[in-house]
Image (cartoon, rainbow, N blue to C red; front, side, top):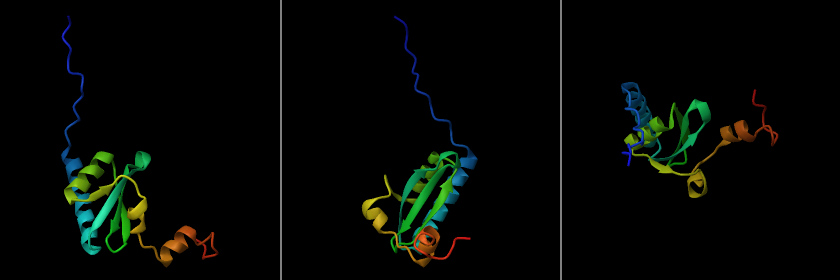
Length: 117
């Protein structure tokens, strides 16, 4: 009977650059949370560009950051203590407050608003 080797591959060790990038993103997440009375988030894969970290503040303010990889985004979220949602729907999406800027940029052309030039 042949010996079976453990074929499970180990993840490559994080490089110092990866750790610095995650730490920088975590700092930005914490700053956003401080400015908006707390923050929750969701990670969204955006193809080769990386992973978007969608942030929603307790006051309804929102924004996003982009990490080069999902692993860096996850690490940054963990370092920042960010509560993550699996999807951007339901109660989480309802927390977002939009204003005139968003209506102009996202729907202005369709509803007769100024052109997005």
